[in-house]
Image (tube, rainbow over all chains, first blue to last red):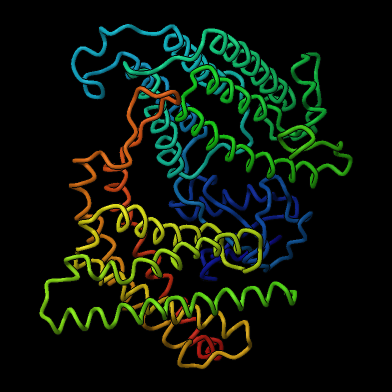
Length: 303
Length: 227
């Protein structure tokens, strides 16, 4: 039998006692017991448990025995704040850019004044609308049918932060490309950009499917991602996160296709963010798997 | 820290300290003279003419501090440094240099006094630290004067920006419109308004940060004892 004291990691204040656990009890059981006592933390996703006040959090699946938690010991508790499901966040942040872009594509009076919608559309403008919509439609469908998330939730503020980013950039890019005074690049440049865009989108989808198949349904299993039968996944031989490599490739192509500097800025911001994520994931892979193959994080042979 | 790096940083901070002192030797007499004459005159541009050169040279040189933080010569956070330096360089060039109304605005002496005193003490403090001897008076001033000078500086910056808006909009200053080959637009008028609004969330944070630093540096010993 184990009785544990739960202490706030920041203030070191007593939160509650958890009783009647065994050495086979998991951290998840501890969290449930806390949630049963403290209504505020009933959603165990917002709970974080640490062995030391400033230590790293421990996983839900770990048992007290394995972690070496003795009877009468203290565990440190951190409130991660109100949580929201990943799927909700993803659907909200991706639906926005689709709706915003398509709305601005109609050249509303609000942005361009009267009569803008009756001015001619260059074919590059129509192609860009198609490419943009395709990308976000693909993301929405992937969120619903492909992705398997390892964390069920994230802090609720993320939905506002992420939506502001995606919705804002969508409006910024759409405003310029759909402007009646937009100057399209040469036809060859548009076609070249479009072809590269499509290739990268296919690559990105292929990698997402490969990552999905790596994780059996309903689990949090993590494995080393490797190339599958799909030739687009061969990029796993060079980098840990080829989905990001393809995504950046797609936005570079989109920028070339539209020759629009705001699209380039969107690409740059995304590339920076994805590079940060990729470096983090790459580090985790190397730490988790001692036999992790030699590869870069996101840009083959470079980074 | 290597000898070369240390020498360079000492040189840089001493140069900056002297540079801002030079600015003070132009600012102070000019202000006193204009005050004595009862002239409305920061307000006729004489003040700006007197300090234009040292202001541009030494405020722009502060960009080097971003580089120092980026390449790791100093331990400051590059982003925070960039932010602080950028806002000043921005006001110097994009507002005061660019718009005559800002040069004759009472906001100009406000920001100049705030910047000059802050910078002389700040660079003296850094130089002292590098040389291994900082008089307590300098430490105390660095972590005390900001209480009044920081709000004064912000007032001056916002004031100068505000009086610039009309001309920026009228003349379309630094504004890029379509059509152009890169399909980009830039509306300085809107951007300046956004920057002015950004002071609302940012200023309290930086101000409170300085108070925390003050507590840590001036009374750090006391808190340690308590624990």
